[in-house]
Every structure is written in structure tokens, then in C-alpha cells.
Length: 168
Image (cartoon, rainbow, N blue to C red):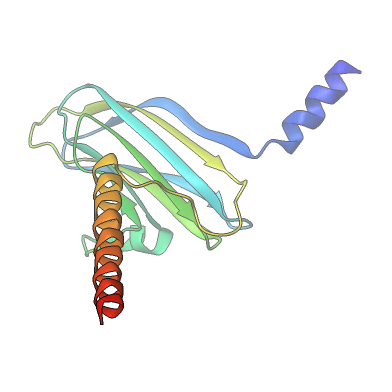
């Protein structure tokens, strides 16, 4: 009975881990991973960490057609990308089903290949409506200060007008 419940729980899971391995990417080259998003949209979550080799690795999410242009050395359109670094994280909500690929690219000038641990997961549980975000603490403070300044400006202007009206 318990094993049946675990099977049902696994079947209802909306999180799918695609890759969790160390990939070797030669200098100046790239490797791609196909994402199966033909039926449903999903949140793509990818992390990488360079274990050895040059620290100029980046992740790029693109459509499969753009990958074909990349193979032909033509400029390719990217949906999301990380900066070249020794580690990085990419989060992107793919809203339209289609053929997508995740490219790990070694941009190092060093002749050594980069060995990077790559983790890629898909989450099919999509929230309806906009994604909720928060402002940074600095922006929160700026909004509060501006709001108080506008509020007290309106109150002082109204008070002056009322006092002028009472004195007449």
C-alpha cells in the first residue's frame, strides 16, 4: 500500500531533473542539452560550477533553430544567458511550448577543456498570473522616503490653504 502511494506521488511530481553530471567542454566550443518542452511550458533551472580548467563558462538558453545558426557560425538569438564565470545560475520561465536547448559554452582562451558540474531541472507547475518579485532593500527605502515626502508635501500645502481660508 505504501509503495503504491509513493508511485502515485512520484507520478504527480511536477519537478524533473534532466542532468546532474560533470561535462567536459573543449576550449572555444560548446555542448548542448535538449529540453523536452513540446507539450507544456516550464521553469528551466540550471546551475553550473567549473571544477577544473578555465573559468570562462556560460549557459545559454535558446530555441533549437537558433542552435542550428550557432553551428553555422551565424549570430544566434538567446532567450537567457549567464555571464562567463566559474559558476552561475540560470532561471527562465518558458511560456510557449517548443524545441529548446541549453548550451554550455567554454569561452576561455586557455587550450584546456573546462570540466563543469551541470545541473538542469524543469518544473512544470506554472503559476497563473505574474511572477511575484520584491524590490531590493535600497529601492524599498527610496519608495518609502519618496512616499513620505509626497504625503507631507500634500498635507503642508493643504494646511496652508486651509489656514489662509480661515484667516480671511
